[in-house]
Length: 153
Image (cartoon, rainbow, N blue to C red; front, side, top):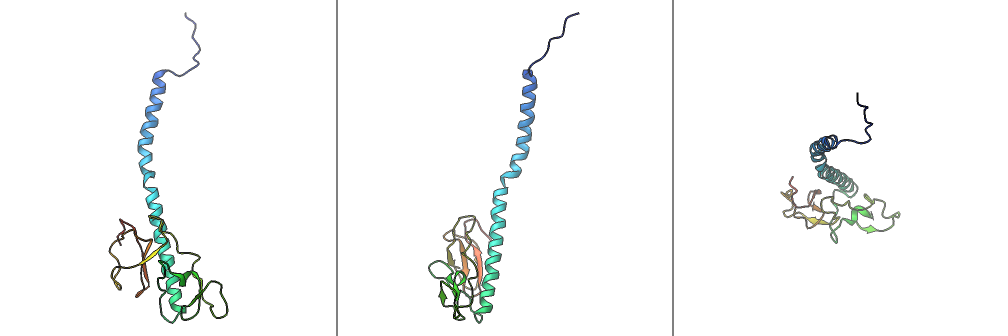
């Protein structure tokens, strides 16, 4: 009878089988995670838009039914202290008791812009985004929507 040899390594066939199994698993699992970035951006933009809308409505309640106005591609009446007429100051005082409603306008996660632009047709929600700014704002209704290419309501 021949003595059995001690094996110290894997055979080539064993290594190839393991590599093939890992390739099949990777091909199955990786596509499931590739869309997670877009899903996270979509969730973030929905949350940011909802937060902005609620703060705009709070501003309206404090300012006799008027909405904030766009100034220098932003909404400073949301980020600074205001009086009942919407006049802003950097530091809240007795004459400017309202706000700030947000620390800063949140970035649109699809284009990383914080700027705000008027909607193309006031009184009508936009039908798509151009990507020229982070947000589209309708000062007649207080509505705010993301503004990035590929966005549709």
